[in-house]
Amino acid sequence: HEFEVQEVSLPLEGAAAARVRLHYAAGQLRVHGGAPAGLLVSGRCGGDVKIESQREGERLEVKLSTKPEVFFTHPQSMWNIQSREWDLALSEEVPLILEIGSGASDVQLDLTYLRVTELKIETGASATTVQLPATAGFTRVDVDSGMASVKLHVPEGVAARIHTDGGLAGFNINEARFPKVSDNTHRSPDYDTAANKIEIDVETGVGSLEVH
Image (tube, rainbow, N blue to C red; front, side, top):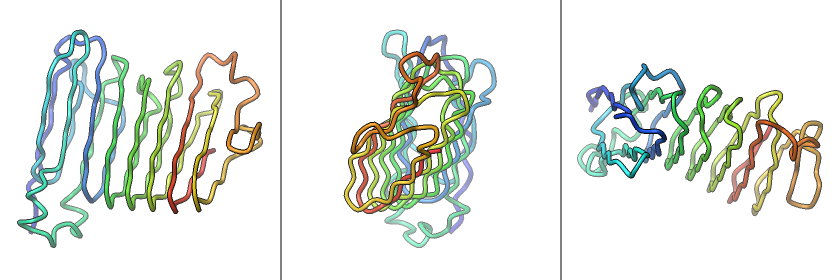
């Protein structure tokens, strides 16, 4: 079964900030900057997508989610990765809270030019790669992964503090950039004074974590 591709174009509606929640079951998820002026989200989604949007004061709240009945109607399509691809551009105009919930997915987030102040990732059996923001000021990142592979890339010139709380996870953290300061914490030497910095908290199951 081939899903139709749904075009997504959600206006900012003059909001000063936004929260974008993406709940994604299976397939490939691509998120990056570059939404046209005046749009919060622009892109293409394979398959039926439920879109919810509401205004909370100055902030626009948007949620895109996979319709669960899709998998009961066409369970074989869970393995048809091409038909399950989402490719979404987000606005670079306003501060963003980005929340990703994914199952058996291939997730690639390029947040380099986005003003993401908070990133939450909950993954199951996913492979997740994230290019973190370069000039967002302060960004808080929370990762809760099961059997997932998570790779986080911190841009040059951006400081980071990384706290890990994992079971059997394999940690690979660049200690030249982020020296170990305690059993579970790595931190850039200039973290306290850096103009752009990222606080990363990771809870893992039996997956792996890389931070470079």
